[in-house]
Every structure is written in C-alpha cells, then in structure tokens.
Length: 329
Image (cartoon, rainbow, N blue to C red):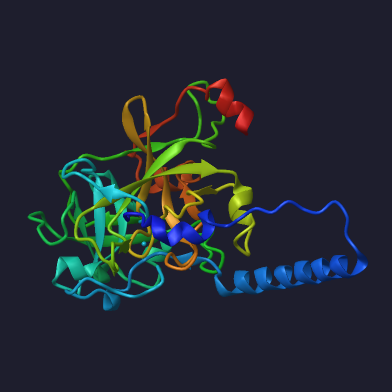
C-alpha cells in the first residue's frame, strides 16, 4: 500500500476538454474514423500485453537497500498501526532466513491451524517451501514464530491462465494463538443475496509502495480503502471477463494493490467487526497503469470449499443494503 504522488496523475487531471464543432466535412470525418480504428487496435494490443498479472513478490527482487524498479504494489494508502490486524499473515519462503526478504504473499488466519490465501501464491510450491508469520506487522522486527506449513489445498477449479477460483488454504504445522477473522457468507440474515457494489473495502499488505522519490518494499503493514465497482470497469480493461466469484475494486486515481499483496485480504466492517470479503488476485502492472482497477477473489463464492477443510471457520452475513445501494445494482 502506498502514498499517492499526485504529480504522477497530472497527465490525467490536466487534460483539456474541447467542445465538438456542430458541422464536419467528409475529410475530418474520415480522419476521426481512422483515429477510432487505431485506438481500437491499440487497446487490443495493450490488453494482450497485460494479461492477468498476479501481484505476488519474487524474493529475488527484494534487497536490503529497499528501492526496486519492477512493475508491480498497495497504492494510495497509509501505514497500519501495530495490533490493528492481528489475523494478518505473511507468507514466507522457508529457504530465506531474513523475514523481510522472505515475504512474498499474504493471507489471513481463519482457524487456529488454517490460513486463507490465493491459489497462485502456493501453486508450484510444496509445504516445505512455505513458512507463515501470523500477526506480523513489522517484517524487520517480528518476535513471533515462523510456522511451517503442514499441507496445501488449492481450489480444484483454479485456472492459472484466467486466475478464476484463485483461492487456497494452508494448514499450519502448529496452532496459532492469534485471533481469527470472520468470513463473509454473501447472504443476509434473511438468507437473501447481498451485493457489495459501492461498499468501501480495506486492502492490507506489505506490497511494493511508491515513495516520494522511488518505489520501495515497506517493512511495516500498510492499508488502503477501495470501493467495489461494477464488473464492467474491469471487463473493459482485462481480456477475460469477470465471473461471479470475482469482484472489481479500486479508484480511477490509482489506489490499488501490488507485488507482495497477493492473497492478502480485503475487509469491511459488518456489525462493528472486520469481515473478510475477498482476497487480492490480480491487476495491471502498478507503476505504468494508473486508473486500472484490481480483481479480487470473492470470499462468499467459496463457502463450501472453505468449510470442507475448515469446519470451524466463522461466517457472517449482514442486513440488506440501504435502498440507495440497491439502486446502484
């Protein structure tokens, strides 16, 4: 999560709007049609260049000097406070003893022995490759234990090309004493479907951040608030249209998530309690594409998958949305 540099957006805010002329001649119409055709071609080429871009971190890109120059971050956010997110978990590469360098993805504690994360964070790895630090805040000053993974469980429908069903569970080799987070069921107390459209969510992570002069890997947890927007915002950007188990969120100004944030939670307050409604899946390369929204795996679409492994996981719904929210759907 990052502090937003307004200067980087000046190219958007300084664009001038011109009124169209009431009359056009044939030559100007032909030029406009040619321009429109070229724009369509360029958009198609751009879409092919930025196929679903997972936002996990490669530990080879992290250095003790912090500044890096790679394409993927949490944007437009602030540093969290110690103890605010006690169920937050850092996924670590077990072969790297330095915890700051080892962190590559995130997750949450949903039961004393279980972590919820993204499938692309564990795909291709074994349990011996992963340690988990539950309740971490400062990666350079963590006094807790690095718990080895006992087993990995990727959703059977996970598609690494489209990143659909991008969800997985990590069983810990020993229980954590940290509090667990409640998960959103997607249903109201009347068992009616509930929409998240227009709701403000909070994304949390240690992902690549944009500082005042350079990009850097923060050692302390950061957070950013993001609104859930209509799927069409993401469908207009990415080659694969969203399906019901995904949601689109973000700001046009560039607040978003990035490398190292993958698998981390997006939460909202329900009944004065932080509730997990989704996890970071993919987005456009952060440094180059301001105004591009992120795609998140929707927690409520995987209730059966989660309960199948973790019967003790806690789920909650919420009362129906206010009438204004319903009109937005």
